[in-house]
Length: 406
Length: 218
Image (tube, rainbow over all chains, first blue to last red):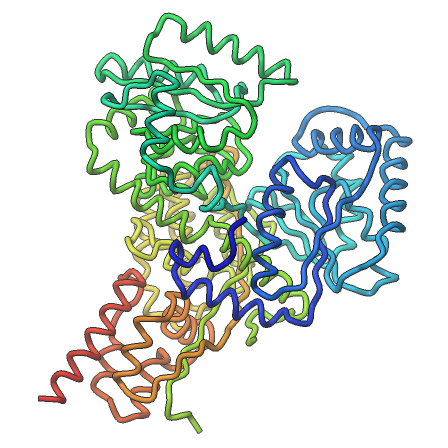
């Protein structure tokens, strides 16, 4: 596990020193994170990396996980889907069971901190304890909140408004709420397997394993096999490019297991690609982070041609590897790419094909975009920036004014 | 009384979501009219820190959105060209944007809307100011520490001091003037920081100090 000082060569001493300064200001404040799973999923992944780093910075922080049976997690899955805009209904019994499990968890938590930092909707009703404990409460929403189903939203809203502050990952997720809403972008960890520097021998071995030719341009999209990631659109764009440029396409990702739709999409993509020898469909098992890292590093151009997207952190991962990225103008992607400055934003298959050709044919321009893109990620989307944002969030609970002297 | 040494401070920002959006110029006008000053400040200064090494084409969020999401290039250019350095009061800057948008609205009958999902979303920011360990007692130390501090520190002493904290000048020039380096103070004061990247600005100030020291030594 990386230590905070391991990041000095990446972001510089000044950034780490500033984090220590902020950490000092939190010396006498305890912070308790609560979520619903100790591993698997983005929230657990980021907490498991971030909490040791916060401790390195001198902050007294810990992490509790609520417990629930299958029925509870079926209900929370439904809530999750409804917040994503999927049409479904929750019965009164389901909602009261959801609250009941939260209350049981509240009783079993023995140690409460000065700040309780609740992640996502599953433990949201723990806030009932706020009146008794008289401490500060934060609700952090990690999911795409742009189009939630009204009844589920109204059910959650009354609990959210009991918190001191709410946190969202993108401006599009802001709601009308009576409490403060803070924007904290998600982040990538430059020292994780998915993003760390790799040995050239390892990269070559991956190319060999998948039969990829490193002499010809490589166009890549890394994503789940999902209609919303538009893999068929990517193949169509590639065909338009292939008429003029001898190149290869990699469509790599996982997520099809236990997901009937994912398997169907994968089958369709394979069917679409079967007549084309230079299309590599790579279905990766979970935890293939090193393979994904290698495939990104070897690419000439990286695509993220999503039709809908939450934040779309795969874009930040590609930019971090100093690659020119062409991505759709959806979700959180425009926050990561300023068009024609740190990458390219497109709307159509034809537009995507046009820009692939431009970037392959104009490597100097592509390099400039990639350089700006990497710098943009370094300044805005690394885990250290997210730690800083969290520290400010904690401090803001005790400093309500617009300009705070610490 | 002002201290003789220059104590470098730094500042970090927390972004808040205001929950207001705009889909066309009329709604942008209404939004700019009602948001707090910290929001106008955020949308006109954010780019400076996010793009530290290369200046993007659009120097504020309003012009970027008007050009790219509404396709109104002429209006986008007008908003981009507002000389922010001339405004030490955010309220005057707000008025300037409103005048330009109002002129446009008066001459336009059909409003062009953005695509769904590309709405302008108003944000604002809260700032936290922290002392760094760096204190300069003379020009040599000043130049030395200026190379060491983060761009946030530079940003704080140049932009935040003047616009948000409403000081008469940037912090560096104030301190230099107090020490009697009037000419150097004026030189730094005259730099338009909005047309530089932060790294470019840092280098320029360091060069000015170095030229001054070199000249005096001779």
